[in-house]
Amino acid sequence: MSESTPVAKNDQLEVTFTDLTQDGSGVAKVDGYTLFIPGGLPGEKAKVQVIKTKKGYGFGRLLEITQPSDRRAEPPCPYYDQCGGCAIQHISAEGQLAYKREIVRNALERIGGLSDIPVEPTLGMAEPWSYRNKIQVPVATQNGKFAFGFYKKRSHEIVDMEHCMITDPLIDDIVQTAHRVAEENGLTPYDELKHRGILRHVMARVGKQTGEVMVVFVTRTEELPFRKLLIKALTEQYPQIKSIAQNVNSKRTNAIFGDKTKTIWGRDVIYDQIGGITFAISARSFFQVNPTQTEVLYGKALEYAALTGEETVIDAYCGIGTISLFLAKQAKHVYGVEIVPEAIEDAKKNAELNKITNASFEVGKSEDVIPNWRDQGIEPNVIVVDPPRKGCDAALIDTMITMQPERIVYVSCNPSTLARDLKLLTAGGYGVKKVQPVDMFPQTMHVECVVLMSRVEK
Image 1: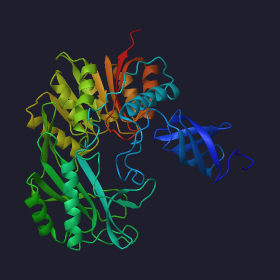
Image 2 (image 1 turned 180 degrees about the vertical axis):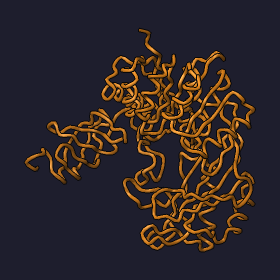
Image 3 (image 1 turned 90 degrees about the vertical axis):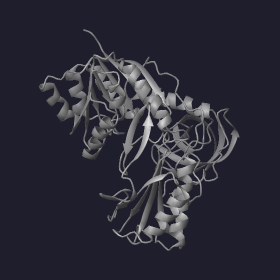
Image 4 (image 1 turned 135 degrees about the vertical axis):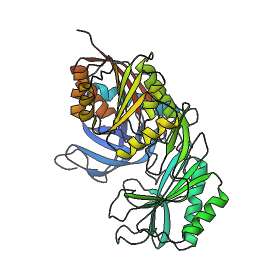
């Protein structure tokens, strides 16, 4: 024990867990000192070992659960203890949904200062496995061998694995076949320390409704050796493959994709459908990885928008037009804005593909484009936002408050930034009416929300 902390490194203690962090670690208190311990659940008693201390908090590891929670489950994945992908397989399906609701409620209260907000029970999946329609697998040389899998917890070391339980089995199998063929033919894995080797990642995605598959090889070099062998092996075994692409990333970076992508076999896109709308998906397109729950999420956004066919809607952060095209079915007109030019091109193509003529899309920052629309006489009845994890830009918040739409529908992937933004919007004259958590990523602590806000009449 040090002078400043009641525990010291290597101490073994009996603790009771009182809370759960947003990364799934258990929280315990020792004489007011906070310990974060992966694997612990609220209400459980356990023996733990302290592994690191700081002035205000420390970290430990679980030695033994002496009194388990009724929400504890046995993780079915053989890689669970090593892989950093699914942090909460040790929590039952019902427990995961309950904790995610609590995460949202706590963020609203602690960060947003919003109490008495109705947070609905989390909408989960009937089958919370094999849901991912996309897999991106890093490739490396490890201990002199070809390693192919996901990263270990808090590390850049790869867990060499053969199966991922939250990924669609078809693309899981296709990626393993690509691994085998690449290894058998001597295609060298990328070495990030030496910046040598060729194959960096293999990505595959499947259209859940269409069954169409795209495979992307991410390489350090322009050349992809054994390209014909790879294509032949994959397309002969898997007729579902409609597109094979190569992305070139020659930089020293942790980013998966480089700037250049070329189709080396088949089409440039595959197709999928959500809620009766068809989407063309290219190698770099952002498309939700759980289409089953995406339909639930966007269906709730459509419900909260309460469209009658007479409304003008603005969709900020519109991406490839997924929410915009949902809304266009019931709106007078939808205007979508997105900073990524390629996404706007995809959005326009998807509108054309579905013969939707009451949706317009523009490239730019929402906080710049939306005021220009206002100057052109476009006055929205509803504004929908679906920002990245960092939340809405402060200038966009100000713009929405100035625009004074009747309703704001906020789709969020981060309860903390959601709470921050709702606090600003409530100060600007809006009231939070409903909050609906949706479990888009079972077995992880991530939770999405749809929030309905209405203008408070003065």
